Image 1 (cartoon, rainbow, N blue to C red):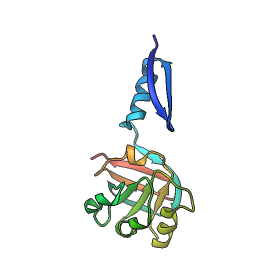
Image 2: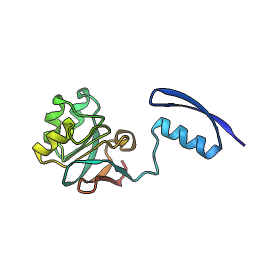
Image 3: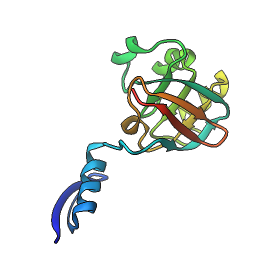
Image 4: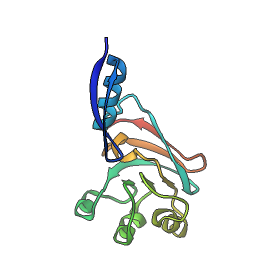
Amino acid sequence: MGGGVFSLNNGEQKVALVNHEKAQKEIEDALGRHEAVDEVIGKIGAKGYARGHVKIVMNMAEEKKFLDGDILVTGMTRPEFVPLMKKAAAIITDEGGITCHAAIISRELKKPCIIGTKNASKVLHDGDLVEVDAEQGVVRIVKKA
């Protein structure tokens, strides 16, 4: 038995007839619920290894919650993020390539950095304990908050 699902895909609307399991996955993906995920994969922006607690900072209005040694998770960094990047044990971004701001500054600061994950800010949550393996491009969730 099929059902209908409505979702947005890169700004495009789509409606599809799907089975229940596929509909549930589409809904969870659209809402950003990835409870079963225990790692995030991206490109290596700067090599290294770090372990710490996630702090998701999408804009600088959230900077006060960020402490020394936290793992910075954001959509992408901009120049105003540099003070947080200096405090961070590692940087993880949803967007970006090898020449993006996060990758360049991370290499200058000698901080592990994984870029272009597409979903780190949705999969990871504030307070999650993670290992950032920027030798392999993997963020492993050690303990969920």
